[in-house]
Length: 378
Image 1 (cartoon, one colour):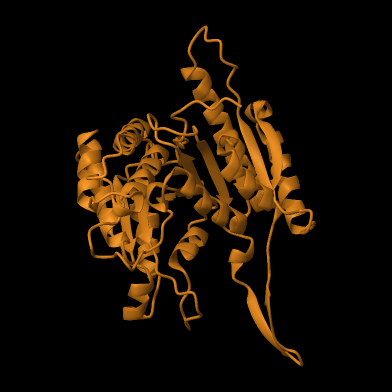
Image 2 (image 1 turned 90 degrees about the vertical axis):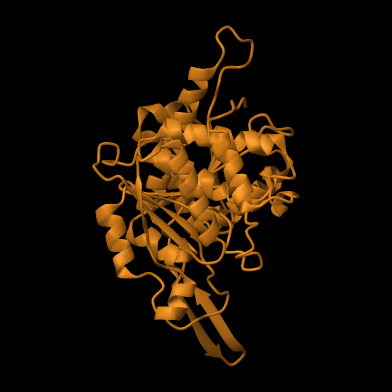
């Protein structure tokens, strides 16, 4: 399959926001390096669109929970709903052990704002070397094991833990529509940018449905059937090819031949795992952004964690947050600015100046230095 460059932007505008009077972006740094990379993303937005947006700083996170007993203040959700065109979320330090009264605030935000799709473009920088990777992973954001319905039972042989998994036709069909819509957009972009008279094969688009229905025949079976059925929801989707991959095979092929994938769609848990793994294909979790997308709101979110080992040292990679800012802008009616940001990021990565790049990419640079270099390239 031929994949043209520069198709990563997710530019379908969130309903109602393109003409909305809302010109405010919520900033939710949360924990750890979120407090460093979200201000960097704000600087880039202000540089590419001077005076276009105002910003409001909002509380949430594990650190906020430790201080107040509340991880996601109701006022944060209220201000997002009533005042903001969109938001940027930094990172959260959710503990791996149970803490009484605590639940992940980003999971709660996705549910309360019905941000049912996590969209993660994974693309090699234009002008870079290596395999030309240009894929988008679309993760269902509201169901699967992330409904957090768990229990533990004492038995004569010791404790037994259970977790409920929810897969619904409704959620699976709408995440399928999101995946096919993105594939159709990417196909239209490729056709628009294809060189007239070129000998190359005509542009194509493909959706890969990721599941494990050979084992989980009921839940994953419903997911794959519902996603396939969603292709009938729009005439544009008929031109999109469809394939299926078992999740373990998907991981293997993604690392062996990532260039063959276009748009992959998966239930929540599989999508979480394969999208983080895919970041290794392009250098680091620090360079991959994402957008939590619903019909009425969007939150940009870097895919990395809070990185407490480097928090406060000024060496966190801001690129994932800056990419997430571009995804946010593309969804709220600013696709040209978003494209400029991505081009500036690509230029910094392709140059591979280790004096500028941060340590996660083998460099000796700083958060501020990377941000300044991107702003200069706008």
